[in-house]
Length: 182
Image (cartoon, rainbow, N blue to C red):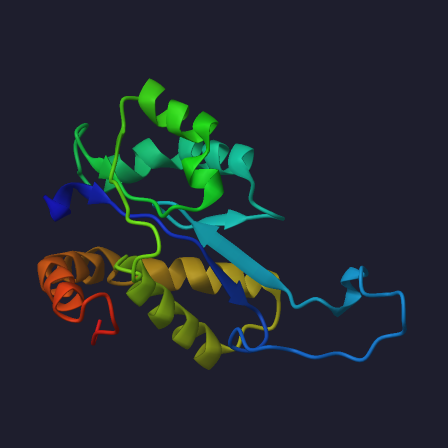
């Protein structure tokens, strides 16, 4: 069954640093200004997609509309695949769930407050480590590097993560939802 699941997840990849906390000195009443923000590239759903700005339900559905079926086709999942998403409010919004229903796409039930069982989390960790080692100097380089890195062995690596998924579930159950080696 797990081989017919199209996994999805979002992450933020920072241009400088490794998602660590940053502190800045600023004049009073300037907290709203963006000059102190850290440039990032955000990605999500199926194939890697750059997300500009804040993601809301409408943007999420647009990403699904433009990428979901193509990702399923590229992965040779067939028409009867199951889509996995977490319980983020934009994912579970009535309009998003209606979109899935209208497209006849089955969505995997995902438990609330669960340990993160998504195998894509492993890929994000690998990608962030590679970005940190590469140290791109601007957002264009960061985006290009992320896309190239994700294409390297990605089908094989993802297949391996899915292959070990039953072991991951067994380990989480044995740990009663606690930490595992996965």
